[in-house]
Image (tube, rainbow, N blue to C red; front, side, top):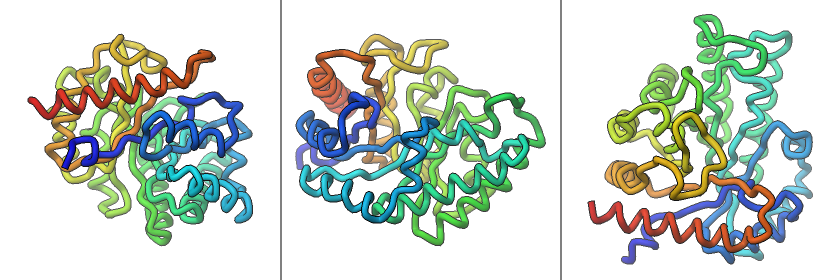
Length: 282
């Protein structure tokens, strides 16, 4: 079997212009050579409103997905920055769990199997500490139990913060909750900024990594770095993931207003394909 057919690469929704509708978005992702799309539910009112989609609205998007022959297979749930699971702000806990339960129901309705959770115990106006960490674990356990009832996997993303910037730190919570419905979905760029021992950190998640974000970074900067312009060693990271059985990846980059966004999407896919080919030679 050809290497390209042994693994699958998805496209992060925000890599395409915001003004595209779902039909256009899926068609363009397919044309650029990606295998699936990862939906973003971020802090914007427009994307949070997706959590309240009616069945008719869901069916409309699924129709476009079938027509384009490109599935939506995961949700990047960055709306959690508004209400992290460890939040101590008034009403924060309740709102955090409500949003997560809504995301689980949306995923189940759409046939999405993985929700990438943000590794934040707190964010706006709060400081991480023993109380926020304990609250995060308590509410994470509740969220995982709810997701388990729908057969949806929650997976912790490694972030840019000290709380959860490595797989090793995420694995503490995976082991504490101890459920098949809580796993790890690392961001290789963020890990590369957190430790020089990237491959060792990836091995810390052996058997629990469901997918990986392939994102470029430079020291101290975590977003909007073009592929090849940063310090991420993609071949070594990919090979370590591959040897642990990881076969599902997402190209995470952002549309920044470029007019040649179609060309960028295609070239980024080719760049990552080359990284896989290099990884297999290690």
